[in-house]
Length: 229
Image (tube, rainbow, N blue to C red; front, side, top):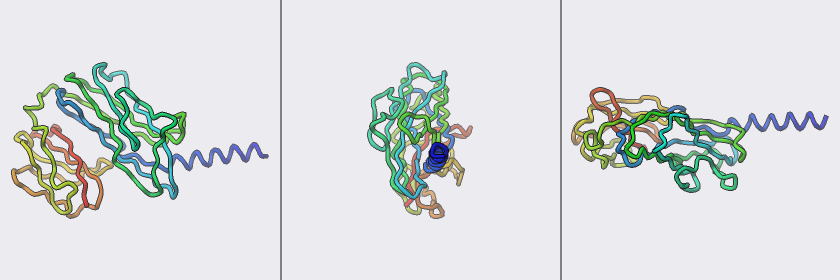
């Protein structure tokens, strides 16, 4: 009887843990020129439980990952050396009850090499990385177009955080329009890009959003993070 109670208890807490953390978006598709020095792949992790949660992570790469590319993971604690693809057992991440963070990201360096690959960023509730909580599929395309022919790397959103409006600064001659997505990847708005234009976000809730700059062929030129106050 005691053994049965123990098994039921373990199953109960395993199921409970699996619903504590939510990683958004579920899928992230990114595209950038192969001569981009670094591309930061951001994500948001939220604790929807009514108590503190500890978790570990792992970055999984499929067989198409180019041998010349490198990755560096920065979690809620620190930024690790290139090539470290799983969270150390003695250094778990923690979130307080009902909190979320967008501080976790993967820094990808294509090292001037074209390629297409899939990666998965996975969260676990145990240090042995056996109890999967949630995962994010990352689809990466590194194209052969030179960075200088697409967009000035100094392009940015300002102000950021923004309240009702934001603008773009930098050179974006090839950018035709922009699209705004929430943290789950849902398209919220799209509009033409014009010099000096202010883009209205007064109808959005406070939080993190992604702004994709697109060319006339609907190819992604650059993805920017927008914080709405």
